[in-house]
Image (cartoon, rainbow, N blue to C red):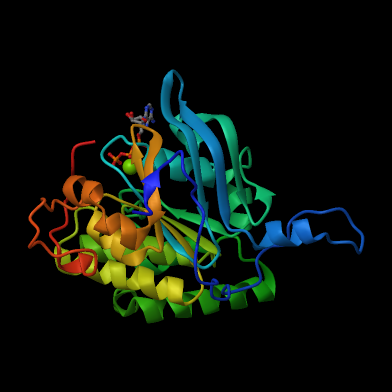
Length: 310
Ligand SMILES: Nc1ncnc2c1ncn2[C@@H]1O[C@H](COP(=O)(O)OP(=O)(O)OP(=O)(O)O)[C@@H](O)[C@H]1O
Ligand SMILES: [Mg+2]
């Protein structure tokens, strides 16, 4: 089996990524004509997390975490309650400090630019946008106002044009948000609120989206709809780091996956191989050793564990 414990490599991403939806921000570099091959390669790299340790005061939530999300890919991070999934996304988005946490060691970079230590607005300016856990929409504001809030950085005629384009893209992806534009967001169903949370993030025209358990608490139909949307967003060129407890869904979407256990990467590998591995099938997909049980190919038809012991 190729999927392996973390001591082994965490690379080997197969096909070339599709084009990005817009030119990624240029990495900061000294003025001058020379751009080394190394710098060009770094700019093409997606998210790189190296030996990350992070926590909240005395609580260590992540240790020695390394992972890569190549441009254009969907990468999943699986794990039980308290495994450190949200902490990982907060460390990338610069929002750990809002939870009285911080990075203790290691580095996070995107396209060769260092994100660790950057504030959240600088991370967004690099094209990396998080959809936090729990659909944090503004419940008293209308759907349209929520979407506008996602494009607050847009200034001038160019900014307004870009925001209008982003809004068109969001409303094409989620027609229900156009129908409900004037309704208070708190009145939407859970699935619609998740669409709004993703839509608001897309208003910032991300190069990479960080999704924290987008299907949590949703009925199977609504969860399937969100999964389709994530697939569509990625097909349009946006890189996705997807944190999920719904392992079957995440493995059906991702190219590569990591399993976090108590703050450390316990397993990683191509998603199809993880989905076929006995350990993942037993622990995360709720499938026993029954040889008649379906193997690898069709995770969407398997029972998804809403929660599993961490
Ligand atoms: N704000 C905080 N202050 C102190 N400890 C925290 C805080 N947030 C998370 N933790 C702790 O950090 C560890 C990792 O939590 P984290 O929220 O990252 O896990 P998770 O994998 O996202 O879990 P879940 O699936 O329940 O959302 C846990 O031990 C948790 O109790
Ligand atoms: Mg979480």
